[in-house]
Length: 286
Ligand SMILES: NC(=O)c1ccc[n+]([C@@H]2O[C@H](COP(=O)([O-])OP(=O)(O)OC[C@H]3O[C@@H](n4cnc5c(N)ncnc54)[C@H](OP(=O)(O)O)[C@@H]3O)[C@@H](O)[C@H]2O)c1
Image (tube, rainbow, N blue to C red):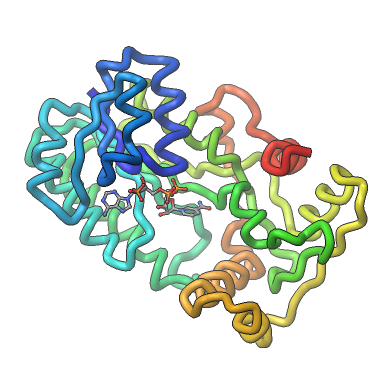
């Protein structure tokens, strides 16, 4: 049986959808902390085990009879401890294989959001040391984060971000979920590290160009001044932590931290992942 954590989240949902199409429902278990949010999973016939990464007894219970675990990272600042709890419970229960969704970055040590990203690599090290078979899915940025970065009014205001000409190999979360499900369903992914990226790199100028061509409106990209960008966000009432994260991710994009392209997603999907244009068309319904 396969246990999917983060089952009520976006990536977990995408993974479960593909698992459901390709394996009997009684082989899938969803781990969720909110019974209401997991109602639709039960309705699909999926066994839901309730718990929290901070509640080790709930994790011990959830791991019973499980062979493979998908550990989807949380965004909590205590996530390393949370992830460790999942790994410990998996090991204790005799789980054979754990897949972990981390991040693809050129060099975490020079990341502007090192304080957040370090925990991904610490988790990977912890999993390796546990002796469990592992698969690390180092995810690039979701194409779905683009609307969050460019803002709701992008079609009126254009794009204003301090990302320079930095590029990212965006991928759709739907396709990352499908690839993740394939890792869980197939053999041969033991002790492998995959860079889950799109097939090409794109800058925010490319995003502006594609949105212009899809919408028929001219959308300009302005390379914002990184020094004054946080103050601008503050003026718009963006909370402090979000400002720190938005500025940090933008700096990483500008500095080429996400300029990684790999064939791993393509191989796991057995087709080319969606291009930026196809992704934006789907996300914006254009
Ligand atoms: N690559 C990217 O661009 C990108 C962007 C954003 C985030 N991420 C990372 O990728 C992860 C998955 O992305 P996503 O879009 O699926 O995020 P999401 O929709 O926020 O899903 C996170 C899932 O983790 C669960 N969770 C959080 N804390 C938990 C805890 N203490 N115990 C048990 N379950 C817990 C959530 O449960 P509830 O439904 O109850 O909240 C939810 O199901 C994120 O958590 C973050 O680490 C990546």
